[in-house]
Amino acid sequence: MQQQPSINTNRLILRPFQADDAVRVCALLNDDPHITEMMIDIPYPCPLSTIEAWIAVHPGDWESRKSVVFAITLRESGALIGTVSLLALDSQYPETGFWLGKDFRRKGFTTEANDHICQFAFDQLGLTQLYSCHLRHNFASGRVLLKSHFHFLDCKTLFVPALDREETLCFYRRKA
Image (cartoon, rainbow, N blue to C red):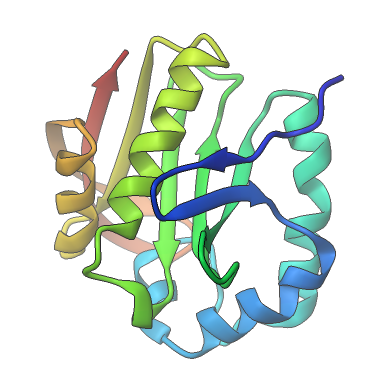
């Protein structure tokens, strides 16, 4: 089976995570509780062991084509600034997900990364559509999705087990 590739963009390199990235990921997550407030499956504070276990499953998930997770790194410095993912690849609703460290937002990095991972999904993985969602009050993710050529579908209030409460989620789709 082919190893997970890297994707080069104008300003970024999207690459597979390495075990030694765990410390940096924890630092980014624990530096900003806003990230974990918007991500329904990341605890705050986030323990290093959680991130180490998360990174450890990436190669197997890539090989089985369940998901593919990329570290977002700056092309010039190599600094890891966040993550962008293709999830549920083995379902009828494959989706994208992303987060970025607080010092790197509002610079177009997330849109650039998300747009390129979508093209990868269509061109290399043969997907014909992708979905994504965000918590209703996470306007920044909604803007990223619209700039990445996703179209708004609907908002629904659902019980979110990871949060143990109802939340309104907004859903989007992008076609190849």
